[in-house]
Length: 152
Image 1 (spheres, rainbow, N blue to C red):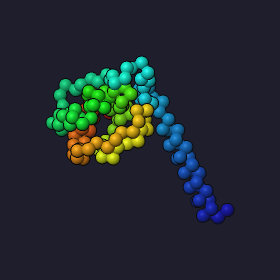
Image 2: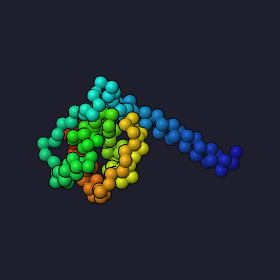
Image 3: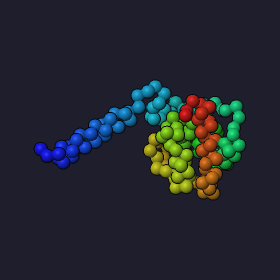
Image 4: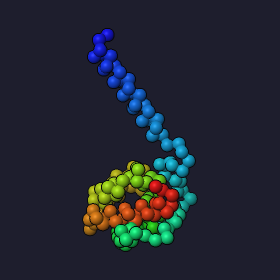
């Protein structure tokens, strides 16, 4: 076997090992870190899905984001982003932690809408009348709510 064949074989073996490690590593087994939506069958339609602890105070950006959220987002996502059963998910949930959904994911969802992929509430339509800056302020508000609820 020549060196080139051995090198190509090693690359495939290492690549396969890395792929297997990535697959196994993405299986979320830590308590409290599940990306699986909670069972909402016992929650009345339209009621909050999660209980949200409020931070003692908001940064100036988050305070602006809260006002925008209340105007454009709370009808579906509920007061303080607690979600509304059978309508829209809570944004104060591990699924929306920064490591899984970046702030840019919020921007893209507002600009383009998003196909349902974690929850069974249907697709989110795009939201008219919001700039990227507006959505970034909303994201700041959501992130501060998340941190107050142990989601980092």
